[in-house]
Length: 600
Picture 1 (cartoon, rainbow, N blue to C red):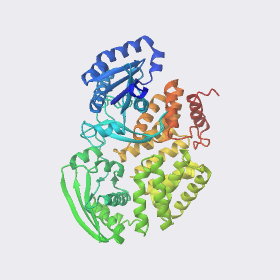
Picture 2: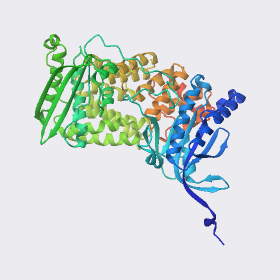
Picture 3: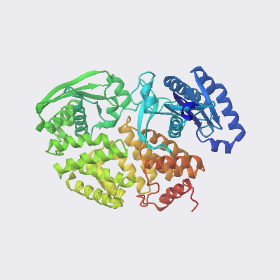
């Protein structure tokens, strides 16, 4: 007689789970209309696409659908085409009335019983669906590995996610369509809520003073591991140029969206709204460094200037200043004499500390727990080598502040004290460094220091460097903390103009909080959703989005957002909010209580 195990039918298959985002709300508003629309979408779009791509619908449950495919490629191609079709069908439908599917795809071993399928492979697909944004697609690492390079899409790594009833964390990827343009705006196709149907934003107008973007320099060292050094060199050149007050300088985060690409300088000028573009290369080896640079008029592609700079690694900061001064002299020779040579204070004489600092920055800017912890470790090592290294002190203070605010600190009070200590040490050595002044002020403002004094520090930073995009961004955050959301939005717009290709997640989060405090909840939710697309592991976006949904009476979405928040932090409701306006604090707290199902 066969055993029970022998009677079980198993196979490896691609599983696709889908459901309708906000289905309960839609049914509550218009039960008959929602049901009719869902049936039409199923009949005319979903079911035919599944059949076309050789899939089998296993079962449907209200708004949910479970299907299996013999090929992961077929499953993903089908999902992409469904989401594109749905975006087109929703184009003329008001945002709050759209039926938008979330899709999760996994590949795994399943059990088949009377036509139905069971097992962890199915459960993971369902959890991936819950992580997807409205109109979006998430898939597991196994599914991604079988599809990569076979379809015209890109995969954004969302990291390890702990999901319900699955013992081990699941590595999750979000699908994005490829675009011929670097860092395109959120597409008008199938990537969830936001600027659906929006055209490419118009090119920024040229400022009324000389303007420049510094593109990433090519690493000529023959060692890919030296890439960070070339990037750090460019960042220092941008900083040196930004100290020239009559010059409009595009921030690093925007110019670096062109990294690794062959670009048309005239196109770069149009997209960034600048007259001049600086490009070059860095070769490091044997204790020496060679920097080549050329300045181009982006309006017609004319090469205005080119030069080569050689020196030892001990001279690296002087080389950066030489390049900045040379470019400024070519752009505006009459102002060069008046300005003179602005030699920036050297951030550190210890190149090992500088090296550690450069390695830390991209890790911090992931805005994820693991990245911030790794960045902090490198920054603390830099500080140990040079206790008066201001940039490392100020960024380490922000790392500690993020650990406390996001619920990631093992000993919050100790971490809080360390953050304040580091920020004050940074201010002691800041002198006229705008980056140190603004970062230290931000950290201290979040821990309750006098808000007026912190605003004064950031304003001083902006006087020193009016082209400092991050300074305007931090000024927006601190304005929000001070209870001035209207001012916050103004400062954020200035930040985005100076860095028009900035990764938008952080500014959009602050904009979302400002609109939340203005009680413009629709505006807030759209920006918070886009912020989460960029930084899915950052808790603050989820807190504000959950409260936003609750105040909009969209309780299903509020609860789902709280569930996603709990997956990345245990701190759902912070006990010590940094917002100085009492009504703003209560608006957030009451929304979170409603989202968690509490009535008082």
